[in-house]
Length: 253
Image 1 (cartoon, rainbow, N blue to C red):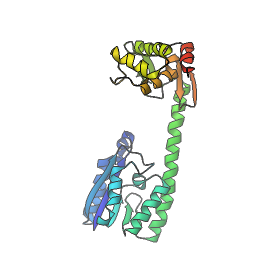
Image 2 (spheres, rainbow, N blue to C red):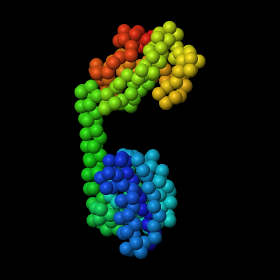
Image 3 (cartoon, rainbow, N blue to C red):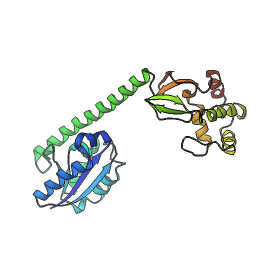
Image 4 (cartoon, rainbow, N blue to C red):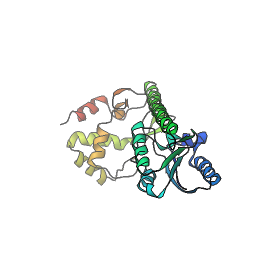
């Protein structure tokens, strides 16, 4: 019997909760050894269970199903949190005469009961995924309402204890960009001028028209925080430019 072991974690939090890749592999390998199964291991690290398209190792497994009799995973949520994707994969497994086993839930598609349970657990897993997504959004919304930062650090600021703190070396560059664009009315020309002066972005990259546009359209620089581009409110951080300058440059066609 040849088994394809599949493992996945999406976050460090999951690893801390005891379902790290190594923790999954150890139990799955032990199961195979007890049953004298040969096995290969496919693992995806740091990848969400929402979709299977970006999981290279899972795609590799599916493309080589003809070499295996069983696909084995630690929990159903490790292979998919989408009922649609799960149904599609089960169909592929069936067409290739491959069993699917979820170790922790003790689900085995070789039996009618196993096939029924896997769909029930798949629905539960998808609901759990949606609840997690909603919880994360609510937590970020709460942080936004309290004036905390819900995004990554941008040029001109650092993030300390979830608060935007002015970066004294970078903030003059941001101010220069706004003032220069107010004169040129052109993203590309503004980028050229900045690069000639030796200015660089947050990660040390040269400026381009697209990066200048992103800066010009970011309300953070006039003292506001954004939440998912849905709403904005006055933040607790120090503004680099005035609201009037922000409105003026963003009114330029």
